[in-house]
Length: 228
Image 1 (cartoon, rainbow, N blue to C red):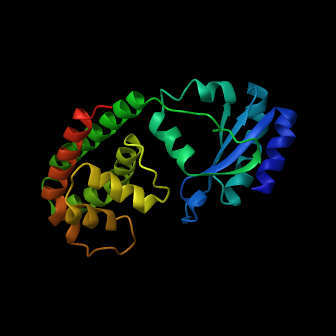
Image 2: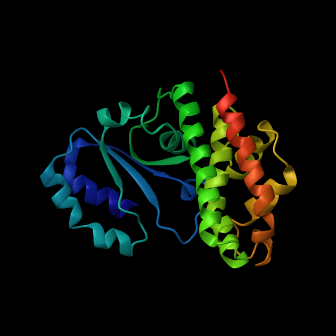
C-alpha cells in the first residue's frame, strides 16, 4: 500500500485526497484475491490515466487490484447510482492515506431499497434461467448454486444495511439479514457454507436448489414490500 500511495502521489501530487482499502482485506478476511482500493482525487484527466496505466502491471504483481480512481465530487454525486457498492465500502474500509473520505456521507434509504430489490430479483431471474440452461443435470445445477452463493450472501448483508443494523463483521451482517427476512436458518447456513472451500460435499449444492430458489423468492418478496 505504501508503494501504491507513492505511485499515486507521483501522478497526482497534491490532487490526491484519500486512499482506502475496502472489501475483505479491510476486515482481516483477506484471501488470494487482489486488494481492492479506492483513490479519490480533486481532478482526473486523460494524462493522469495514461500515467497510472504505466504502473498497472507492477500493482498487479504486488497483489493489488487496479485502484478505483474517482474525483471526490463525482463520488459524492454517484451515491444514488451505486448505493450498495458504496455502502459496502463505507461499512468496511481502512484509510491508508489522506483524509477520511466517508465522513458525513449518507445514502438515502430508498436508494438502498431500490438497489436491493434489483439485486434480489436479478439473482432470482439468474437462478431460474440458469437452471433451465443446465437441463437439470446435477453437476451443472451444483455449479450454478455454488457460483451464486457470494451474491446471495452480499444480498443478505444489504438487507441488514437496509435496516440500519449496527453489525460490522461480514458473517454477523449476513446472518442478521437472513433473520430480518425470516429465512430458514438451515437453508441459509447450507448456502453460505458454499463460500468456504470444501464447505459441503460435491452433491449437496444440487440437492439444495429447490429450497434455495424458494428462499430467494421469499427474499425478493420481502425486499419488494419493505418500507421505511
